Image 1 (cartoon, rainbow, N blue to C red):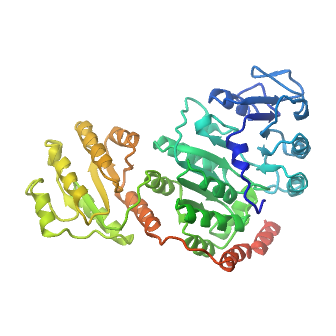
Image 2 (spheres, rainbow, N blue to C red):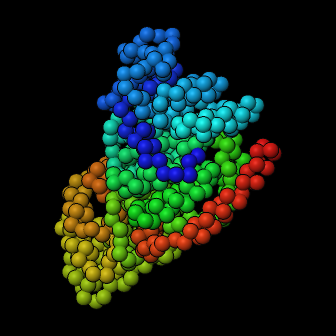
Image 3 (cartoon, rainbow, N blue to C red):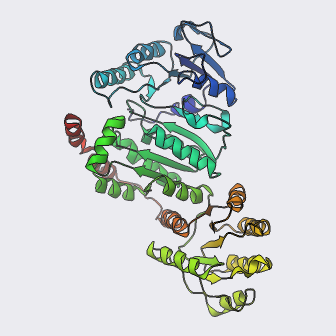
Length: 495
């Protein structure tokens, strides 16, 4: 693992001009054939170099017997799609050919018994000796949606998949979790610019990639999944980078229990760190910690919209008094405020809603707006103009028949303000949520999930601007995270 920023790392991984696939299969359904198929299918504009000593052609492309045989132009990225015992020799060959970065798909290294740990040490030694960078092993590569760069074998790209670029980047130690997150985020209408899976992290680590991605102008939010912390210094740098560039870094960190830590070690050879220590360090760094996949997507949905509240004062506008109370209770419990409106503003709301509604915050406009859409429009106008509102949450439900006009009203109101304005739309066919999501409006099915996301957004936005850390304080965080190395070694002995 590198202790220095590698400005060419992202260029090799996400913007390569030439990609070699070592062990490329002519069968696009095989693990070793998928990268060639995906690169062709998703419109990669560079050169694909299949390497297969037994074939002159792979999937319609000229094949080469080894990486050294291809001399037409420099290879920016090599995918080694071979069994574990064959990887070291090919990695050396890539280094001799001047390849800056290789991706290794194979498992059977530090996470396995027998020769696995020795083979992983050999890969580390090759990186140290030659300077080649390595993503993996035991990983499924990466994705850059905007340029059709898909050096991966993930089944998440099977079928009629359309990639939606956007400001969110995903970095995950776990391939399966990472691609679940990628697919779920895309299905939710969230634009994903970059995805990478780091696997066993013999060299390139998740925090290192997070650091580099946070520096990119086209990345606004970075989501990460960690099983262990193999590079504490890079994690601290990632947190400090996120604070400096004022971009949110959201992490799921697993392995909180002894049993979970043991499972993580068996999965990717991950090194466990005490969970209370992780919580404390992430809090000091200003990193948002999510409890799981759905919570991470909920938080990212608001963060990706790019809107940040200037305070924690929430106005709730609802067609259901009960749902309004539920959201209000949740917001207060999460540390937000739902302040009462002053009399002049209550009067302004009372003029546009039915007399049996409520002009107090939460504002209950009742279901009457379904027959008289102007009620919702006028109530929103008042809420948007209210000077003591930092965030507006709108709660609706069902109402598919009348949804077209309602969606238009909500979309227009969202465009008129710079304040965060999530919509909770429960029940129904889901079509209104889909339309709102396409228009960029953060939308949820459950008030409780919306509140958790809002609380995370608010805490992040209102966190004091970072100062200049003394080197000693950063070193202390690194030392604390590194102190559990002996626990990792003991776990490996016992496991």
